[in-house]
Amino acid sequence: MVTFSVQSGSNGNCIYVETDDARLLFDAGVSGRQLQQRMAEHGRSPHDVDALLISHEHSDHIRCAGVFHRKFDLPVYVTRPTHYAMQSNLGKIDDVRHYFAGDTLEFGATKVHTFSTPHDAVDGVVFIVEHDGKRLAILTDLGYAFEKLGDLLESVDAAYLESNYDVDMLELGQYPAFLKARISGKGGHLSNCEAADVLRRVATKRHQWIALSHLSGQNNTPDIALETHRHTVGKSFPLDVSSRECVSCLRTI
Image 1: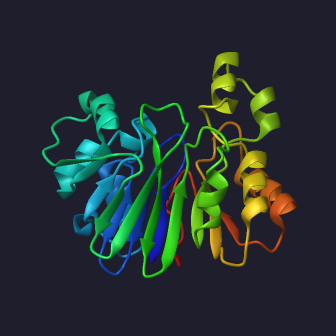
Image 2 (image 1 turned 45 degrees about the horizontal axis):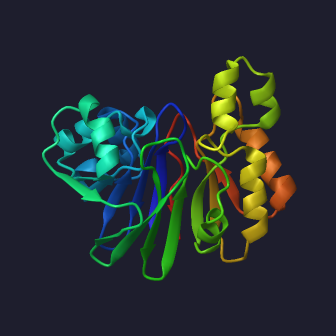
């Protein structure tokens, strides 16, 4: 299995995953031009993608879903409530394939397991991609460290794991009180400390890498996120960060 983050953060999210028989995009928060340019850096093209899967309706995940569909002829997989919440902003989409949170989607021998989250979306999900005995999790926009999160993370070989904000930076920053409460509340995002604590509890030698993802541009930095996780999980644990501005390295499982 091969994967890379096209971009990760509140300014736009998109992840590419490739197996022997499927090429999948998760979310559509970057422009069509950015997608083409960044995929080309790894010798890939969105014209070869089999499907676009949407996690939830927030704009940093769906703003260019209509463009991806029309420009690259991608079927859009989305839950019905999320589709209703997002469709007014996307233009015409002729090939929408609804699924229920909790379903397993099949693309040849590749399975995509979907799981509900408490994030403040109408029907948000996270994903685990499974192929040839390998499992990759895409775990962002989580709300809080809900009970099943540790089990999901423990069950995979690698993961994109939300590590959105540093607690002190958020508390001392310029955001209004209501937004701080939303980010740190039950429907918001995982802090560095929360993500690191979950990872500490389930980390094993099975984990080939964890890519800290969906970092805030105002309330976090890659160095702070990595330092927090290394202090909690251990300096030798394989960690890196998904960029807010550019494509990541090519990661394999």
